[in-house]
Length: 94
Image (cartoon, rainbow, N blue to C red; front, side):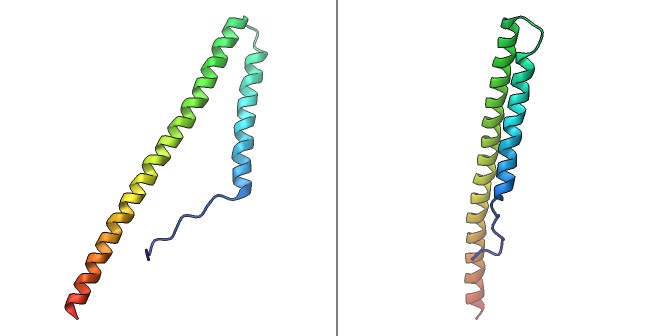
């Protein structure tokens, strides 16, 4: 068994807060674009840019998380190998 503490999950209130803040931010940007005193094609351009920005932020956070989780998995494998090697060395001394 590993001596490292396992990461705990997020609380329900934190998850609800992140969803609420995301929805509020998207809503405020949408209202700002909707009520901007500019032509409709400029509003459409801003809306398209905002949608692509949200999509790229989601993609980036998933990629960063996946890279972090894969490095944690590799580190756990290396830790298990080192622990097994140390146990074999200890058995050899006895």
